[in-house]
Every structure is written in structure tokens, then in C-alpha cells.
Length: 179
Image (cartoon, rainbow, N blue to C red):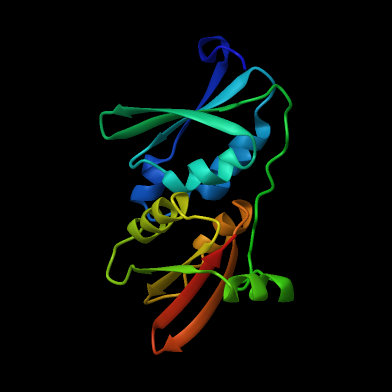
């Protein structure tokens, strides 16, 4: 691993995007894909992006997080010298699994329920990924949500999770997530 101080930092501030209601995920992934050997992404965000940590960790990135006025500065850098492109999921189905995966879900011993109804974005996403970080391999997360979380699907897919969305009532969805 290179010394972080030796890396050229490419700055990206997404606070204005979030303030304007835009999801900066695609913009961040594009910046990550443009990184060359010896470069790091210096991301400025209004909140600590826990879901992004998981996605980029699975792609070979480490990070250093610092609290700054009005948000966080997160420096993402490759933990090895090999540059791997990060696939940006434009779309992800609301169901991401195969028959064997469904059998695996049925045998999960520990089911954790998480109700994110009534939370303002990005709180549901943050709460979901925070819970997923502590999820054991024999566990599954069942989320209760009042809307289909379309921004969640590509992140789950990129982080290697399987998921199933079921509409359980008017404006009520259950999303089951597992590895």
C-alpha cells in the first residue's frame, strides 16, 4: 500500500448535488473509474456515506474519513496497486437472485427486521447499510419501506448482496437482503 500523503488527490464535492435532491452515486463511481495509479478520490459529502464504504471496499478501496465543517472528507484509495474498473450499475432489478439463492434465504437462521418508514432520504439507505455491515453470514435483513428503494438496488448489487422485493400492501414493501 502506498503512503496516502504521496497520492495525488482528485477532489469531488457532492454536497450541492445532495442539497438539490440529486443522487451523486453515478458521479462518484465515474470519478473512481477515472482514477489512475497513484491517485485517490477526495470526496466531500454532507454525511458519512456508509453505503459507499461497502461498495468500494468490495472493489478494492480503503478509505480515511475526516469530519470537516458542513460534512465529511473521505479519501478513497486502492489498497493494492492494481487498478480495477468499478462497474456502475445503471439499473438493477428489484429482485436479484437465482433458485439456489432462494433456498439459501429460506435457510437463514437469524432474521433482522428493520422499519425505515417515515425516514427522510438518505436516512433509510444509511440505516440499511449500517445494519448490513454487522450482518452475519447466517442472517438476512428484512426491511419495511413505504416506497420501492430504487437507489438501494444498484448499491446492493455492487456490494454483492442478493435481494427480493415484495409489495405487501398499498405503499408498503418488504425487501429481503442476504449474502
